[in-house]
Image 1 (tube, rainbow, N blue to C red):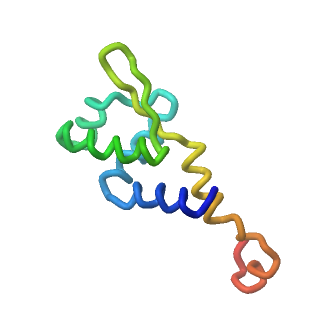
Image 2: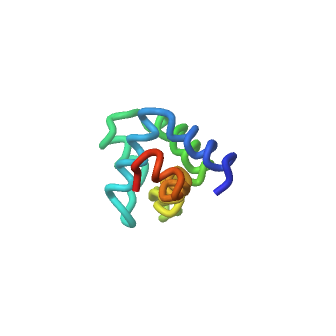
Image 3: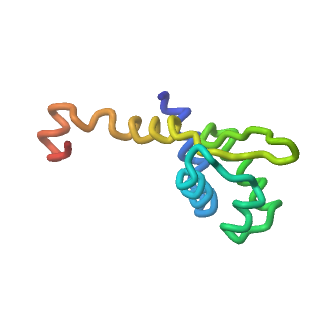
Length: 103
């Protein structure tokens, strides 16, 4: 992952509500949730939720599929794991490990 892409994804997560949305979607896994279910679970108005879902979708952290009249949202777990890998890519570098004791 390039730095610019990582910054875009981290920027999308830099909101308590968007972080709550992603955590909720991760919890529901492949089943995902429709917007109305998320709105109820997070106790936020649908219009507010829609704005945040759009941001997360554009950042590639959430994806959406049309199901009849509804849109089902799911966390993009591979993108989320990519962020973790981006942060940890130098973790086990010999020099870094010696200096920090990590890994």
